[in-house]
Image 1 (cartoon, rainbow, N blue to C red):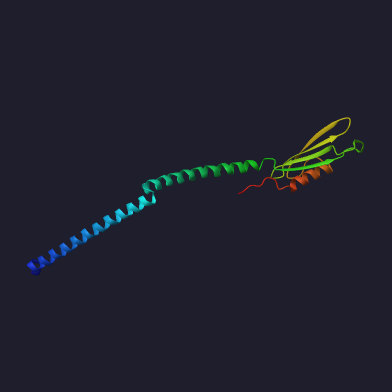
Image 2 (image 1 turned 180 degrees about the vertical axis):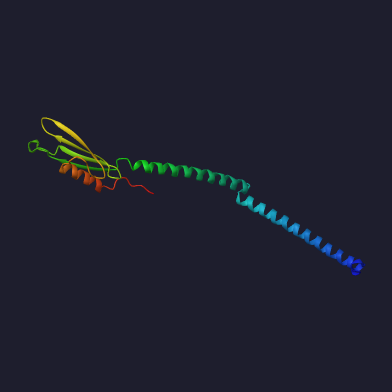
Length: 167
């Protein structure tokens, strides 16, 4: 305890304090140089402008783009759900319904969605008249009796790959 009260101890403490003070000054000078070099580097990279401002602008733009991308994805998902219900597959068969008509003017057309639901139309042509009949199709079949041409049109439509979409 007596040593703490001596002049030698005070001198040692004064020298330690001066050394610590010099270390603080040197460290402060180095930090200022690093800040100056960093600022100069940022200005060089930013072509004379402040790079921080450019980075903030780019971050804002990226945030806006992410929001827009999210909206676009939601809209595309909505469209994909709706497209499943739309006509995507078509099968057409032309045939000669009557031997006396001379050409394939009758037809069967199947219009189906992704689940093979839809309608088949059969247009029968003769010289005296022309009739068109429609039959509902559910999962590739109809509750009504179908002609061979209607069955062929439905099979052609079901073999069609329809609209191609990305998931």
